[in-house]
Image (cartoon, rainbow, N blue to C red; front, top):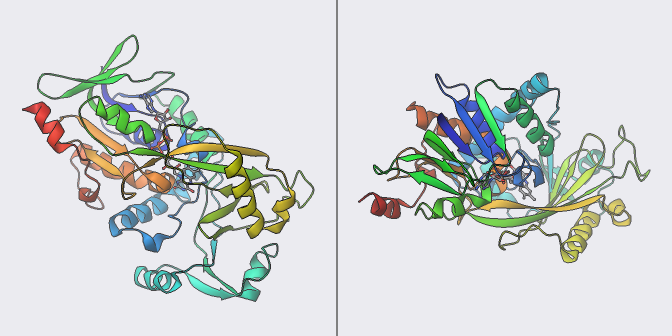
Length: 381
Ligand SMILES: Cc1cc2nc3c(=O)[nH]c(=O)nc-3n(C[C@H](O)[C@H](O)[C@H](O)COP(=O)(O)OP(=O)(O)OC[C@H]3O[C@@H](n4cnc5c(N)ncnc54)[C@H](O)[C@@H]3O)c2cc1C
């Protein structure tokens, strides 16, 4: 019998398991269909901020802000100390090119006390000399950081595998949730066994809706495919690790380039509302390559080193679901973080932990309450 069962080993499930491992008198089991940290949490870009934060709702932003504070630099540093795996958090700032709602952005920054300023041509090219010519100004956010998310996943996984109170079971796909006669969720059914628990937390990323639908809860979480590519200009002899082609995240027309510590550069990403399809396409490759070259012309000549796709857990308005499922006792959700799962993970974990333990939290979870009340209530009546 596990006190707490967590389904899904992405960044959300792994952070949840780490948190639950600290609760008093708990045994914690994490069930992951494949290997932990290999889905959206691996595929993402690792920017520790919403792309255009001034376009988000206030509840999302409070959570993101709390996530940013918790993420950085404490969590990556502690993980590195504990596991030897460095998630490579780097706070190098972000440059916004061609922002159509600049006035709104500056207004937001002013009211939120965020450092965001307009910089002129000289300051821009002094920071990033290899950017395409012709930009007269940019917005500059010096506090933004990025993390190498595949390594964050590896570090979280290593930390959990060594944890005395958390059992990580990979290669275990949950077929359905088990619901007792009193409408209390009692665990999960795998292919050839059942795992019992007092409480179950669904952290299934883009697959969360599918998992909950079988229990009669209509959680509107849908996959939104994102394709990305990485270039290796160091290997191509275009630059060195010490003098890279790019040092800061640059965002232009909704696409971004992200530098890694070893000189690699990521370009992302597409937004494709399809089913559970993770294939890459020639069309996206061409479009991403064109975007990369339009930001950093040197990348136009370079073949990408790797091209991949991941499935973001999308929701109707981008707001995640964090909380108890009304009508089904013992069932909780932490899913649907769409484009901001890496930013939100620490705050979402904290919020749900506080709810589960009946503690007062740093913000209200009201805006994130999972739906499905009617259906769950119908089951219960
Ligand atoms: C291209 C791209 C770029 C992104 N860039 C950023 C960014 O820069 N910054 C940012 O903050 N966010 C970014 N994101 C979003 C972020 O990656 C996601 O929001 C986050 O990873 C979601 O984490 P998760 O744990 O909920 O989902 P996932 O990482 O997808 O994990 C869900 C896990 O549940 C498992 N699972 C599902 N069903 C079952 C089942 N029945 N039984 C057992 N296990 C199951 C899956 O195998 C998977 O491992 C990006 C995403 C993509 C795709």
